Length: 355
Image (cartoon, rainbow, N blue to C red):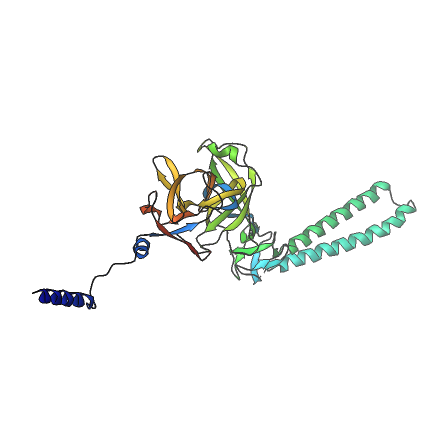
């Protein structure tokens, strides 16, 4: 009887020890603990200059935009530029049939030459006292009139060549070859796009924050993902009673030609600068119970810490108190955390891991 019981016990022990695949096993304690950690992404606060900003929208324009007027009438016989061409001040853009004007100029020149010859002959007679003073003065006045007539005829002939009043780009051509145009017809438009201008309407409640010299930047839909620098150059001293706003004028350097007049732009104006401020990403904030806080990783666990914030700009926010530069702040994954939660924290930019 005893022998049978012992044999059964030994057989049972051998069978249990020989169990194979699929048998439950006790996991390592460390593996269980690691498996319960919450993966999060962290970042350290950094020191940087941060600006308080105000955003506004408007259409940008050119401060140098001039219509080209015809100073003489006639048929267009030559077109020398097209829309989009760069021109300099005084460059000939088109020519009119100025033959009649040329002949009038030549006739005035001939009359002037005749007047000069007559006047020179009477100078000698006047010096010898053979011509009265009144007659001699009359000849001089006639000569002055002939000179003025010639200058006017020459100017009218010069107007048959239509010239650019400013340097810039030809933005509009309103005439065609062979077209008959009249005096003061708008034939071209020249726009200088190297420096653009924008007029920003800002609520009067913000008036004290702005001053000439403040820096700004803008974005346009035509060049997505790019910000262009601008400068506030003038602040209007008066308020528009119709809408309660004041006007701030911004200049935009456009030497590269990436922007064009008429583009709709979104401006960001920096009106207050905090140097070497402690900043963190805005996405790290946890807003609850009228308190602003963040989760800080300490020895593989998180602690919720209330902070005081300042200026927010460009996805970053200033921390006035509550954090140190060597703290690791959770920026991704904090939604499911609470005080004491165990985390597996990563800092991709530094390629390091803690927790």
